Image (cartoon, rainbow, N blue to C red; front, side):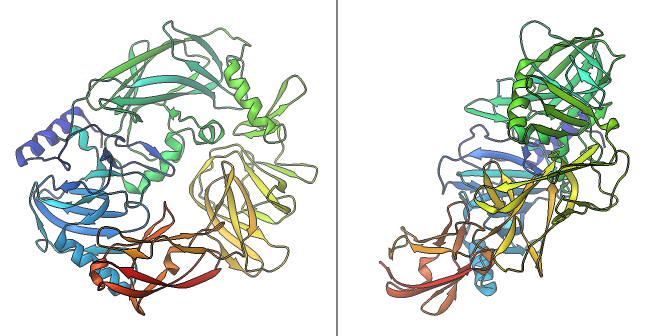
Amino acid sequence: MKITRKVILLSFISLLLMGAGWPLKEKAGITSSFGEWRDGHLHAGFDLPTGRTNKEVYSVTDGWVMRARTSPWGYGKAIYVKDSLGRVFVYAHLSSFAKDLDKRVRGEQLRKFSYETDLWFKKGEMLMKEGEMIGMSGRSGCLSPHLHFEMRDKGNNPIDPLVRGFSFPDTIPPVIYALRLVPLDDTATVCGSHLGIIVPVRKDTPVVSIKGRAGLEIETYDKVNGHSGQLGPKEIELYLDNQLIRREYFDRFSYMYTGDSRLEFDYPYRRRTGRKFRRLFTLLGNELPFYEGKDGIFTSKDSGLISIIVRDGASNEVKTQLFLGNSFSREVTPREETRFEKAINNVDKIMILNCGILIKGLNSFRWIESGKIRGIVKSGDSILVWNIRKKRYPSYKSPDSRCILKPSSDAIINTDLISVRMSSVRIAKDETRWIWEPTIPLNKRTPLEITLPYESSYYSIYELNGTEWKYCYTHKEGNKLKTTIDHLGTFTILKDSIPPVISIKNHYFTSKVPLMIDVSDSFSGVDFYSIKTYIDEMPTVFRYDLQMDRLIFEYPGEIAPGKHTLNIALKDRQGNKTSGEWEITKGD
């Protein structure tokens, strides 16, 4: 369904008629907006700054508590309130719930012997009035204190609250930092470059020329009063010679397609450079409902003035332009060339891109079009390249046959080429790392299998994330390690035989100073589901603060003042176990 301003206006009027409060006492700006890109999903609401924890949070409408959740990740402690119109309001990252709800949640935690709970309530079981205090703000499930506020329609689809009555003063327009034109075919170029160019925003109108097909991307953020952060825009319009050819309006989406955010943005470029460029064209597999009109894809036949207008939820706007010429220039933007030169140095002077292979020579670059590459190409004993534009394969094996990628037959793979190369791992020189390129997102989780040279229970699969190795959930079958991935990247197997460490921070605690225990693991990470805690041999439940690697006893009223015995047992995700016993004292 197309989202029009008329629909938004009707929604806004209906919310005003029923009354709409504000979830915090102070009505400040926001720190994150609806539809912003997170790694692997879209932000489904907006974030309100709190500065600290334990600020009162209020229901914005009459209704009833539909659901309450506690988790060490995601939304942390969250409440879901449904109103009479069937809409759901979510309040997340809380530090605590209101008294009656907190009692129900705590009872469920003790019953399950687990911090993680998901309670659903019947209509009318727990009524809620507009302005009623429903909990206290916190930072559960996240690192910094704030309140995540979310609004969903009758179909449980997130919708933008900012244009439905929950607005605030905003007089600052968005900012456009740069545009980027990207060749989409192996023979296409932009200003003579097969890599594409960055077009910086400036007062005059830059002129660019393309050969073949090229897609337009934009690096843009919104600014709001009272906060210096970078938020996502509300609307983007693309014009060619004053004719609207594409509109993007970020207002509603389905959780079913939130993973397509990696197709909405230029994910490979983000991985290489850290910059977020939003595509103004739609990749195959992107089912997000934000787009109207045709793609922002231009060809050699196109020429004229390209205009881009970016708006925020308060209708503040910014505009930039570039001229698409029909002359062909060999000049490459130095900024882009430098970035790629640095990237190539990091991958042994060869870069596998979607449409071809870039090779760095002594004083120049060489481009090999994907159309000129055979079905399977092997270079020595370290690299294999498949041209899936010519033929798809049921599996892709590394040159040593130890690392295998197995995409399903209906998987959408937005690239002509897939490559895997081998090199050593610095922190474990006897191990191999397998580099799968290009670093494209996959539209569904894809099996990856690595064979151990021998059978061992201490190894798992890890992915290189920046400069650190990140554990991948690994299933073991004999000497085969299996995981699933949602993007190509660099993977290896690493050994973890060291158990986690438990360190009690304070043996003495009170109702105001909680009992806290640090739990850390040097490699695979603590297995949350293995954590078991006992006080005086009676099972109890601590909150696991994943971001701080800490256990916190949030209910000191459950035990009497005096000395007690604390026992903790847990393991890491590799299965290494640890436990301990401590004497603790509760003060009056």
